Image (cartoon, rainbow, N blue to C red; front, side, top):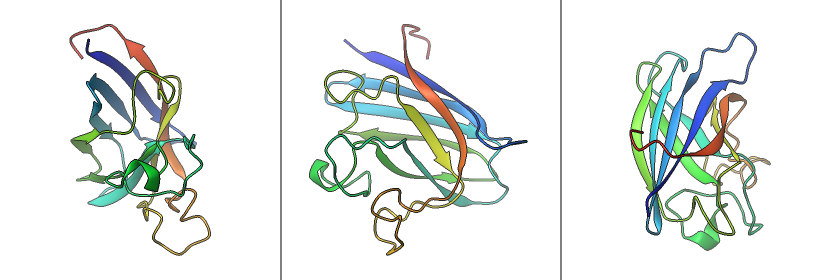
Length: 148
């Protein structure tokens, strides 16, 4: 059975403009993540993107393409804004909409800066990716709407 969840992003900063939707679709062992974000700073820039502080295995921060034992469950890397917008899809094999490490009820966050994927050497690299302040966030909730 395919399960879907959605997070509606709202600005996290006073007078913020960042908003959007993130749709998560569980398909077997993978989760398809459809990202639609608007209102990011002008220009083409990478922004850290993750499930906020979701590290149930107590591992270092890493890249979404890393093996499960080399990253937080919630590490989803970066998204690329083009003219202040992100419209892309990623596939992740570690997050899930069900089971012990479900992301449902957690918060998805878009950051101001690029996530260094734990490789930046900054004191925050291995915990947060040193991605700067939060621009927008939204709680992940299950949906039964098949049109998403």
